[in-house]
Image (cartoon, rainbow, N blue to C red):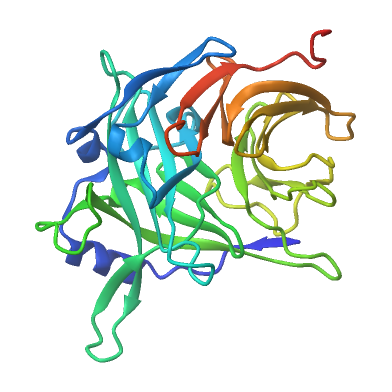
Length: 348
């Protein structure tokens, strides 16, 4: 499997941003939060977190998936102007009608974790540029991906594209259109795509299914991108890790440094913490999820039912040594963090 970085078309993305409205960046979104989270807890473990407002918590159209933290961005040059503010970005995909259109749009919720009381948040719709053949003008359309994984890297937001690799956005490019015409309900900001990192197979290897993403800082002074694929049975599902160039933040090589097949059913997210992989796994719509921990070569220890029902992507905050996740099912959508479990689960 390979990951390549084709030459982007910055002119098209800039033209789109200029057409869409005022460029306000991430700081502009944080100054314009129009929704409020609600405190929530996972009763089985006593872990506290939050849920979305009632409309988002029960939406049949929008489904939460990947997440990332401003802690991921730390250590990379940034022009976003938000300082040390703690922010969480949560990805959602919009379901289409029928199997032919499983994903029709993607949005990112910007959550102010430093807010007093319940954190406020706002939605940003991800869009991509295309040229109208009849007029020659640059237009926009929604980005139709599952968004199972997000990574915040300096000013960049990386979004998993299941079949193609990674979509790349610059969080400074967020715009506030002058009118809300054509925007989905509850969305006031747009973020145009800047570039893409494209994935393919290598020889007889099947292309990776990009189900989730995370950032790895195990080796001081270096960065790696961890990606993995979901498979209900777990058979053959892979984790892969690419070194990132310290200057550009892009993949340093097209081939991954490491490819693993941990044989974990229903992997939804993975982070690498000081050389140990921590993996989230779902177990259907009625049973609680699990965490797995282990080194690259295994074995992997299962920490049974330590996650709520429907866990998704993982993100790691090195300052608190906690992993964050969110859950997807209507009426049970939580965002919470918990300590990284010990290598071996406690005896039952």
